[in-house]
Image 1: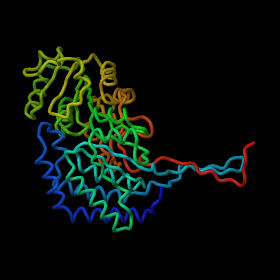
Image 2 (image 1 turned 135 degrees about the horizontal axis):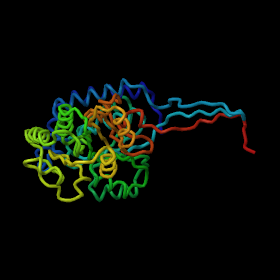
Image 3 (image 1 turned 135 degrees about the vertical axis):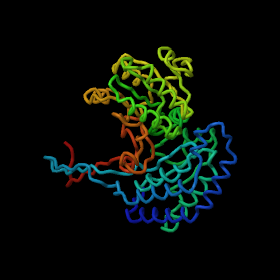
Image 4 (image 1 turned 30 degrees about the vertical axis):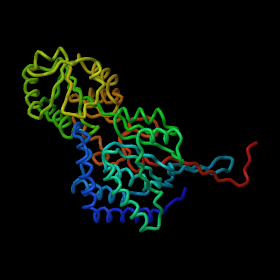
Length: 399
């Protein structure tokens, strides 16, 4: 594929920031059409759909941030001269064409595409039908920015296929696709993995856990739990499950205070049988499946464990491998927990809400990967390239 200069790519991004700002009213009008058509039976999905002036400012900020970042293409990873006289370099290279399939969030049309474009990839965007009007206007902005710099619209394309059309494309693409990134719930990810004919980089479910150790600072633990649960329920880094060490002193009194605070925030509590006697309005856990469930809602599930070993076992069994936290004053115990828990991000005395490219210093992100191949965690600009070996010889042959 054509390798664009850093200057040209940055000029496109600069134009894109200007175009979005100029088209602000059209973007808001299109988004209102999508909001008016949306049946608000899924609050998390609705929250992701909303675009306002602040969201547009965030889009522009994300573009400027990526524009200022170092070009990830062609970076030298290693270089060596062999005894044979061959000189071998390993350099970063674009994937080629990246298909991004996502639900609701129109800001992905900007933040994901800007990263993939700066990494010299062509981008195919398959947004959800609920955001079709907003996405059309945003992709039109992309096309205007590309045209200003003399580039074709094929660098960034919007697909408005229905489910069957998407399935047909995944099974038999009408153009080359090198990588697919599904951003959404478990059903979307399973659908893409079932039908895709190329590599799929999974942006997995959340279902994040926290373990409160016996020596945890209780006031600190409450602040972390409330923030991680209620800060943004539609985020994949929101907290869903909390495991409490049964040796925590004065459990009865402490659970009463936690229950009251969760109730004040409108959070429904599911609790294991061992916890129910200490809670006034908790719902019994109906069956084991709830431990696997990512809520994306004002719900939380709580249970008692005998210690860190049981907590780690439960987290590794039920969580989505996204983010897990331990609340303890014991630093060696925290380190052991962080080593043993199989999650993309592990926390000591901090909210899981920090699993975010901007919060982790990565900058704008394409997704949070829960895969273990290629990259795990926030997918920023540096992670949207692959590598290529350059081998230099002088008539070398292998004998």
